[in-house]
Image (cartoon, rainbow, N blue to C red; front, top):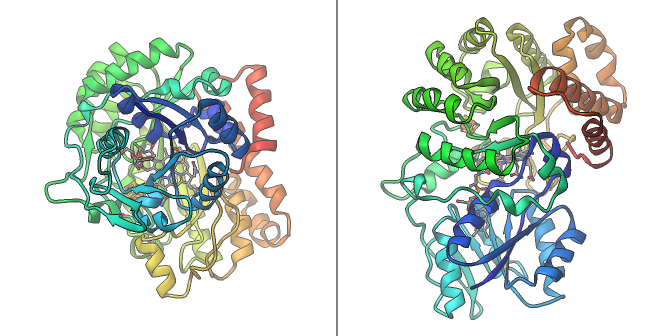
Length: 480
Ligand code: B12
Ligand code: SF4
């Protein structure tokens, strides 16, 4: 049996504050342990990865790649290869859409798409010395050639999966101390926003593959019982599903069982135009504490034509009104810097957000990830030069070639405050966004976010030591 070291982004700032960890390795580790393999994880920085590598002595290093982070992992992989011999494999969203990464020096194989069946099959063959060049989902480098295999069907029933191996992250103190944990009940999303990976996944499906799959309520509850047993400190759950409430019938059953068996308040994501009063009632009955909603732009052309969000302003306002009427707190998330964005369109985003009166509002800059529709559109229309590299994770510079760029970058940091205190807008618009004070605005954004999270959004208040750690992390460690 093999020893597999997963390498995936571990963000120390987000372990304690949100229990955020990369799900892929956690779930794949659980599947591999069923076959008797041993696993470990690392990903804070190269030093930590190398230390773990030298101690754990893996046969295989398995990287989970997001676009932007792949170059860092290629570099780490080459450095590790100079230390000892091992088989290197890359999976995750980036290589799913850019499998040609397999051609890079030091990469032995890449896995496109779902790894639940593809990884164990590959590893078991590798361990037995069998032919690994013909396993579905894999692009493999062997005998000086690249073997490109077709995609296998997706697992139809997610209930066959074991509960994720949360313990793989226990080595991180902040993770063990966290009072928030993340959960995933489904895979996929029925929508086709141009900047997201889902429309690409839809195109990659083989005949008969479903677009959206959700674990049964009982299967989720079994996992959460284990979570409660192993992490008794957990007081808040973040459902990371793209949209938890795609199936109202599922929500109804969840609302019956979850409060009795689990009863931990939770956060989930929704789309404004599909918010229905009855579904919100069921979610409240289940324990809904807070909702996140992507609106992305207040400008109709950008929202619907460029980003393909397919929702009117009236639907957005109506969806938020349902939440307001039921006293449900919600965040609105926006994208700044899409093709055709100007200061004027960004102000429309602000105006729509103010009208909706969210509990909190945040904004992120658009990154056109490879193979997405927004990437093709941006390149074809001169908004993005593909030679410009984007950073590993979050960033505060617009990489698109659009008007008003520096001002929009400043605006992105100040949007949350401008929505909370609309009377500040003349000052922000006419003076602040024109000043070269981005580091200050970035700090204002972080401070405001921290303040709102811990005074309104989290159902518990951080202790003094938690607060110190979170403040330290957000000043000295965070890239967000
Ligand atoms: C939860 C989440 C987050 C969380 C946690 C991040 C984290 N480190 O895990 C937070 C909020 C922090 C976050 C942040 C970001 N995220 Co995010 N996030 C997600 C989300 C919603 C779920 C990820 C997940 O756990 N999926 C479930 C697991 C099971 O799926 P998976 O990771 O793809 O793994 C499967 C396969 O890929 C494969 N696999 C994975 N790893 C490996 C390794 C090997 C060796 C093998 C064989 C197979 C394999 O097998 C797994 C099982 O099938 C996804 C969307 C989605 N639904 O997947 C976006 C997503 C991954 N995020 C994305 C992005 C862009 C980001 C940010 C860069 C955002 C930004 N610029 O502001 C940051 C970067 C953070 C970072 N570097 O870690 C993009 C990535 C696009 C791309 N082309 O890479 C996605 C796909 C959403 C999108 N917009 O399309 N994110
Ligand atoms: S609704 Fe969200 S998850 Fe679904 S396609 Fe759009 S951005 Fe992606």
